[in-house]
Length: 152
Image (tube, rainbow, N blue to C red; front, side, top):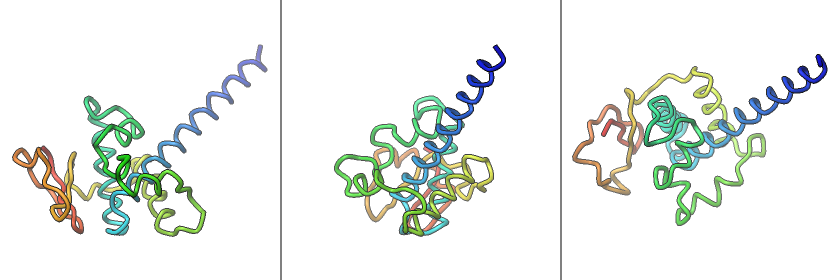
């Protein structure tokens, strides 16, 4: 019986660890796809928005993965976005220093150790690329690089 409990416990820990690594990978891919051109600060800000949405739950989802993969929320995951094919193949420690940085940022975010540079933002956009439909309800809280962050 003790062996069964130990095996079951180790199995659950392995599953939990795999799920945490998957969340870190999905968050890193999201931050990289959305803001790699903005460097550390831009990817940090995207990770902040994902974590804020996951904390609030509701419509966006209640986990890092569900928030990142919510349809039409992060353009880098949209089928017609050129980033989608690129980010699906990204893995840490494979020669892309910028992705390794995104993976580190994602790990800090999931651990609760990433400062929020967005002022609690739940939304962001790049005004040079798009004018979102929710812009009339947007309350800007921060600007990081080309992206405007806020609450809508």
